[in-house]
Image 1 (cartoon, each protein chain N blue to C red):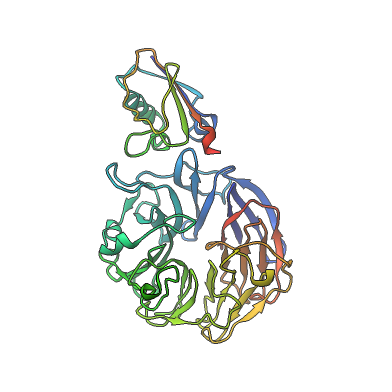
Image 2: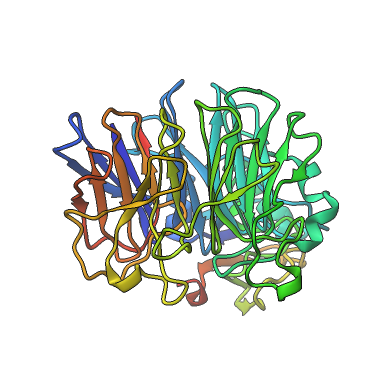
Length: 351
Length: 91
C-alpha cells in the first residue's frame, strides 16, 4: 500500500506492507500545489492534480508509483469565449481501465475515455439552469467530489462548493440538484433551504448499501438513505457539526467518521483534535483521539481524510500544519506517519 | 530565426532546450504553435484558451516587457528574441 499526500508544495509518498512501518519515499512534483491524486488499480496508474501557479492545472500520470510523471493530457480547459476558466483540478475519479472523470475549478466536470490523454467537458452540468446559483467558497468555486454508484452504472454524483450535490441517472446527459433538506446557513433566515447553492464540503457514497450517502456540509452532517432525494440531519451529538471531510465505512454502511472543526477559527473544538465515529447511522458519535497530539491548532481539509479497505479499517488524515496520522484499528489509536510537511490538501490510499 | 527562452522547469518537463530556435513567423502565437509541434502540449502551459499568456508568466519580446495576460498574437520581427519567465507574482 502507498499513501499519497498532496500538499501545497508537492506530493509526498509513503509505503507500507503492514500498516505499521512506513517507508518514506522522496517527495515529487516539487513546488506545485497538489490538490488531489488518485490510483487506478486496474492498470497501476497514479494520477495527480497539479495546480501550477505559472503553468496552470494539469492531470499528470505515473506508472512507477510517482518516480516519473508525464506532462498530462489535452483539453482540460473551457472554450476561449467561455465566461469561466479552468484554474485548478480538485478531483480525479478512475472508472475502469480507460475512463476517468475530473472535477475542476471553476466548477465543472470533465471526462476522458483514453486514460487521460484527452479530456472533454460534460457540458450538461454547467448548462443546468441552477448554475447561476453556484459561487465560490473560500477555497474557490470547485467541483471537489465525484462518486460512481455501485448499483447503477448510469448514476453519478458530484458536489461543488458552493453549488451543492447533484446526481445524474443517465450517465451524465442530465443532472438534478439533490439538496433538499440541506441547510445553507450563510443565507438569510427565510432562504436557508434552496434547491441549490449549498456549500457541500464532502460526501461519501456507500458501495455496500444502495442509496446511502454521508455528507459533511458547510455546517451540518447529513445521511441519505434514498440516493439523496432526502436527507436526515445527524450532526446534533457532535461538538461541532462543521467540518470539511467525511468518510464512510466501506463494508458497514451505518458506520462513518467525521473530524469536527469550529466554524471559526477552523480548528477542533476546544483544540482537541479528534475523529468522531458513529456506528448507528448518526444517532450517536464517539470521539477517537488516542495518540493525536493535542492541543491542536490544525484544520483538516476536505480531501485530507480517507480510509483503506483493510480489516480492521485503516483511517488516515493530514492536517493544515503538515501532520499525517493513521489508524490501523478504525480510529481506536492514532500514529504519526509524517510531520512538518507543507499544508496538506489530500490524502489518498493506493492499494 | 526566432529564439524562445523557456523557464528551466518548463523546458525540463518537456525535454526542451532552455533556448529553442524556430523558423521566423508572423506572430508570437505562430511561433508558440510551432514550439508545440516540437514539444506537444507545451503551448497550453504557456497560453490560456483565449490566446493570452498565463497570468504569472513574464514575457519579453525583442527586449520589451509585455503587460500581464497580453495577447500572444503580436507581430514579430524576423530575428525576434522571446523570453518567457516565471513572474515573481506567481510565488
